[in-house]
Length: 531
Image (cartoon, rainbow, N blue to C red; front, side):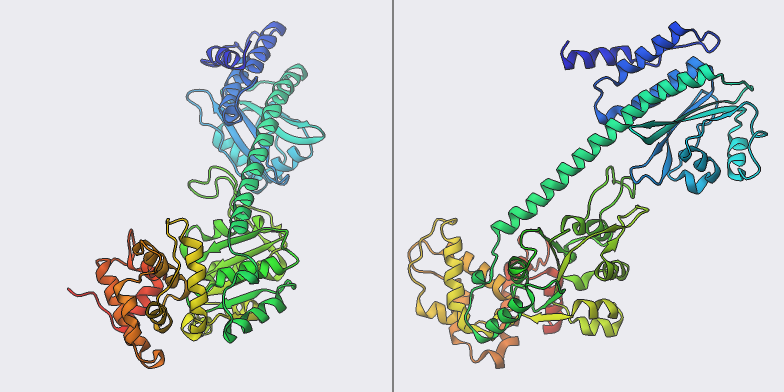
């Protein structure tokens, strides 16, 4: 029979749990129960194992004539037992689902971990004096008799299967405990298979994420040779980067937005001893504050609304490699504290986890914020700043290395012209002079945007700049008029974008700036949207 037909047969047979009157427990009826349950779990997708276990609990309770049944599962960290599945007959409350049995019911937890079969005819009288929380639980539920059987596969505990009566007392014979163990073994196998498939899926998903980052790193500009420019300020930066690259020291890249901090981080990683490992990039400013910790450190299933599965964070993905934190100055204080701990001892916890993980990661951070001022203001931790700034490198803005603009211009033309269907042979002298005299508040990122726009405007072999950039040939010395030129340019771009700073077709994108950076500069220049 094909898999599809077999699955259909199981579903048809499983319209509901079969009835097994508790008063007639024959070998034949138990075999029928076992056959039905085996059919339900045969080939069931791992996503449906939990719902099938709920059905199996109802069927087992019907066979034994009990009022409640539940499964306690040993979590994958091998330290936590959780009550994960619970069923109760109509009119009776279900047992509460505990995420940590050791914290809520410590005596019960110790017995299960020891592999002890718990068989009580008269509860709570038969509970020992130290089982204080357990006595309160029994009284709250109204259980009269109860049996719990721990189960193990391959030498390790997987789960425990329990059932209880609430209407009347009864004893559970050795034969019944043996049958509970057989059914429990069936459930334990299903849980074990579900966990293995989850782990495989998670491993594949993590490998895909790592491969995506690796593909991005390979496709990106890596190596000092891809950092264009021969000016003295840039050469000093490259010398510092070459000195620190072979070490595992944390590096702090400082500089205005668009100066190439991410490109330099990739170059440092490529020259390091970790070049064979991944380079994972995180833009801290682009992440909502509620998701930053989850992105950096990962989370466990159920850690928050929407966390339907466990997920590794960027630190785990970067293990053995480099983590680049762009805009690190945007991190919230509580995240700063956790980041400091990782830097000091390599340890962290996933969101919602109870155990620590350890990674070997080299950190490169970048910011365009004045972190020293943020430390004085109390918005950035001083101890984290000193830990990050062991080896600071400040990237010069483009206006301080105008001699690099011609070679950067041609590099950008060569990168983009084929994609845009252009073949530029010449940059007119007036156009190059305008490019060299313009102050470039968005630095190389803005230059790239201007060149791309010029390529679109240039149907022939000459590069044609838009009217504003082309008019910059008449500007006086940048040092005297930088603010005036920047203000004029911002106003023109804002008017062209209908004063949209965020969203589609916004001014920040046209200028190559982050929206927050643009708003800060507009405030500094006294630019206010007209009413």
